[in-house]
Image 1 (tube, helix red, strand yellow):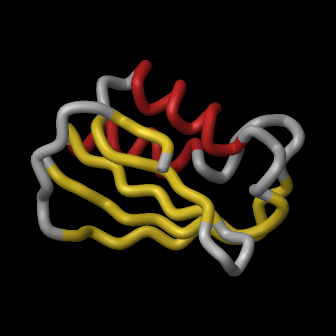
Image 2 (cartoon, helix red, strand yellow):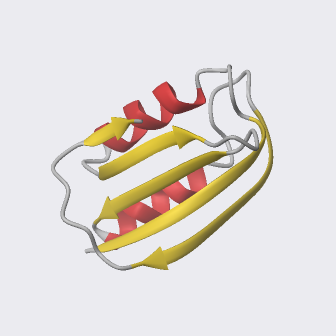
Length: 88
């Protein structure tokens, strides 16, 4: 079990990025959160089995069809035990 925190840049606010990220994370059985940041980027904390976490981190480059992702930066962070994947 690992956790990664990612920052997604581009046109990612106002395009259902958080909702589709939540759907994808839940379908993979992952825990964490997704939230908009004041600089226009989106932050994602994702925890779970490393292969599933990597799947979501790779998917962050796709997002919903209306998004335009210019950069995704992820780093491993200390594991946090969470029970769901939420939108903050």
